[in-house]
Image (cartoon, rainbow, N blue to C red; front, top):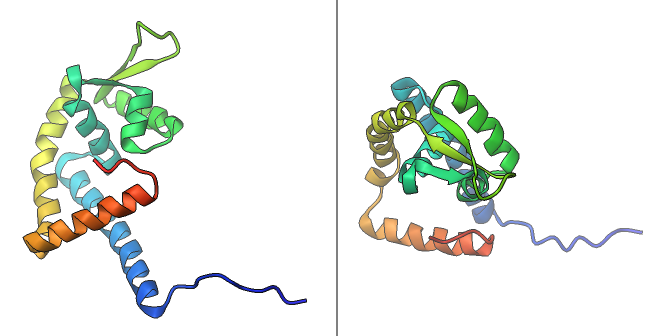
Length: 157
């Protein structure tokens, strides 16, 4: 007995766009990572953590909130923060209100690293993405990404 295949396969245009999207995402992140490693000695995940911390109140945030902001599993945050602690980019602090919780705090070394890395990162993002787009295209992509993020249940801020 043959099974009925009711899979809504992608047409040629959709398949091509999907593969371009996947390839762009992988290559863009790899390029940004290579450039950041060379310029500032930070990985993209390091930069993401430091950016969130540098923009948070008092330069610290609860581990669970950091995981939510980065859309990472808590265990990934814990492992990555441990590696960053060894390089003195961040430190962990006990949460006085909750014995099970902890804060991650940016250190002076981490603050210096993000301040050194940010200009090069922004230049790279501008060169690789925004310089290739018109203002209308940026607005269109923003709307598209907003819709897609809402569809997969992510915050659209």
